[in-house]
Image 1 (tube, rainbow, N blue to C red):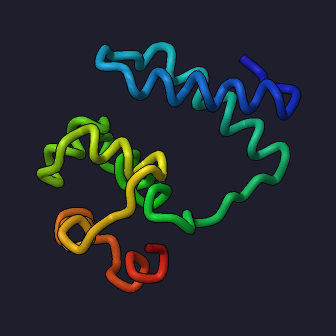
Image 2 (image 1 turned 180 degrees about the horizontal axis):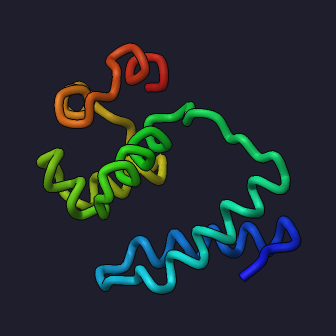
Image 3 (image 1 turned 180 degrees about the vertical axis):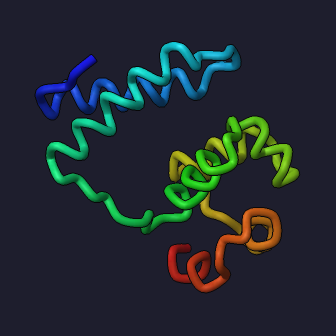
Amino acid sequence: MTLHTEAEYLDALRRFDELLDTDSENTAALLPLRDAIHAFEKSQDYHPGPPQTIAGRIEVEMFRRRLKQKDLAALLEITPSRLNEVLKGKRQINLDLARRLYHKLQIPADFILDAA
């Protein structure tokens, strides 16, 4: 699989996210998408840098730990719907969640405070 345009790249990212969010094992479908996305980013000299938002940082930690949203919600001891609202920007984090992010995901406190 090869991506040639920005539109194809964005579509591949969308499909990749959809496959990650499903409960079934999609490794066979994820690997070619991952490789195509990586190759396109490398060819375009794309370097997004570190995330600047709480939601972005949480998503990075989910990826690093290979967790689905429901698994991360269980780790943080919050409901999956609350986590989903935080990730979509519909809900701000409160002090309790900030503490959980710090203790359970080791997200630096200064990042949490600056990004909140």
